[in-house]
Amino acid sequence: MASSLQNLSAYNENNIPDAKGMRFGIVVAEWNRHITGALYDGCVSTLLKHGVSEADIVVVQVPGSFELPAGAVALHQKTVLDAVICLGCVIKGETNHDEYINQAVANGLTQLTISTGKPHIFGLLTVLNEAQALDRAGGKHGNKGVEAAVTAVRMVATFK
Image (cartoon, rainbow, N blue to C red; front, side, top):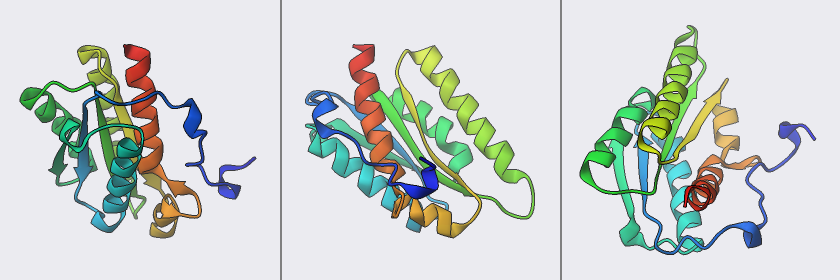
């Protein structure tokens, strides 16, 4: 089924490992705050629903999505984490800036996962317009923040 026809955040809650005792960092981009805030809310509520305590969630804000990998590094320097979830939104504009930012974030998070041995989750919306972003930040296609949280819990369980 085409992704445009479904809620991408639907998942079987019974197939998610218990996240009690897992420790997560969340890096949130401030750019497009009305969208990234909704991603953050979905992410945190999902982590809490699956057993993560509020004390085991550490958050840092960065100016934009390009800074997500640097924010993840800053979190690792401050505390021991099982995974870092990076949330942002890049909307296609009149130039190709979105391609450079999206690729840089993907490469940065991949390298961090490899170098730290800890999952770094790509919760970056890479959309053509604001309507698509809103559809994926709590709208008709679900909430990418929820998906990022579920992925993080599953990956921590896999790494352990």
